[in-house]
Length: 360
Image (cartoon, rainbow, N blue to C red; front, side, top):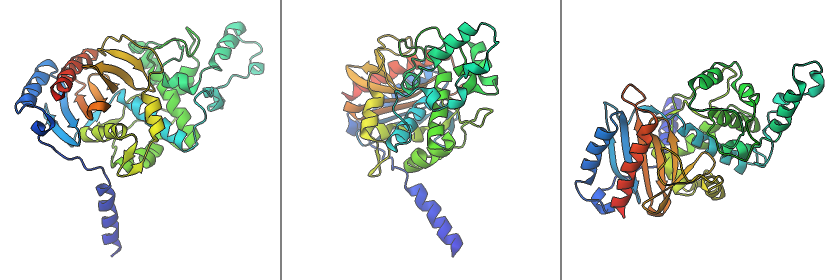
């Protein structure tokens, strides 16, 4: 009897996942052969493509898998992980766990504050103390908006290796020198998103993965089987989360539906609006045609005159939401020898533009 109850509980929990209806694409305004052509064009243009999904109005109008992948494949999201971190920041804020975004991160991660009295005889003390003064101005919002001011190059392999091989990656990032004042300039920084994740976890008083499972993934009916921790046991806030394509779509629907899933407000409508708003002016980005700003780990772009919000990961991992068209496009790519890196993102946006145009 107990076994039956347990099985019923497990079954019920899976049923709590948001149902994803499938619609005839012609009913959503697409020509009968449109997606057949799009599928061929995508594979020809992006040979590393793993999946391509399109949601329009109230259902999936296109779902295709390539290169031997399927709806059970867990794809590496790469920097789409950052957008998940943004959502978790919003949930923590809604619950009153996260302080004002204007709070310096050292007020949360206090162990990384420098006590100058403990370093009376250090090399170049003026440099050390000046860096510390700047570090104390680095806020949670600066981290979310990629305005850390840190001397960091996300495209430098050696920088990433130093960060990834550090025994304490959060300390590694916070002890980097500054090239400008935090909050003054946009510069993509994966290290900063990991620091933000550590701050969220500290405020939630639990591991980020545990917090995500209970407050985000479970309400969406998402099961995660891979998300790495750093050597300190902190879940990565910038990359290395894997997810099924349909679960990426569920996450996109959370934002399209203003934070509501199965009649439950998972993230506040105000956070959805705030996190996708333009907080940083960004009118040009090499792999983001029509760029018009950056939010809290959300890219913004215009496609055929319509505002889109994009979660973007290396090599072609995308969740593109066009709210006024009730449209979501999800793409994933295999990170292998066929993948040409950042160029895949730009190629996919051109195809997404065609999907948007055809839906008008």
